[in-house]
Length: 242
Image (tube, rainbow, N blue to C red; front, top):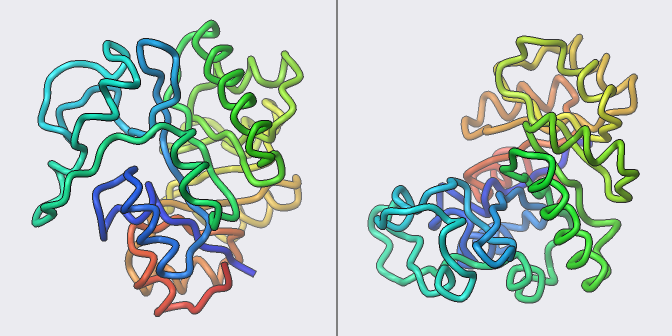
């Protein structure tokens, strides 16, 4: 049975990675979500995709240059045309607290160095323990450095490899780093690849899927989950249980 995840909440229906966006996903009946994480200057986990503020807030500068307190006062709705309600950048703590209805999280870490990976993973583990969400999260990343660190350090939460281009065998890479999930760009999907990944014990999650015909095709390929900007459309198209 294919599951649905809201991409950055409901990116096509509300400003991405904001509380209203996650609420839109929940309102559609999609209670599994994907989101992105960066560290603030005081090492708080901020829910935002880009390392810089420009695209979603209209401001210059990097996320890492500001404290969590300051970032939470910045409106992140600038890239969503026609939205007139301010949407502050949330912390992961705020999201966990505000949305107990969410059944599962793909937490994509936009990380680089091994030292930063350690800080991010420790911060996630602290919050996950505090909110008792160990069975409801997977830490995903395209960063081999982060995934390698997680495996070598015996990190207790499950991980997933985010693969966009597939220059190297994504199934072998995900297995090499001890991942439980393989997060594939839909263009990399074939029935054979999906079957082989699942035979290796990987949950295959596919992004970003917004066209009804593509949604149906991926369900026919038996992907484990679909990540979409449009939860309401996906539910209408597929009526997939959350």
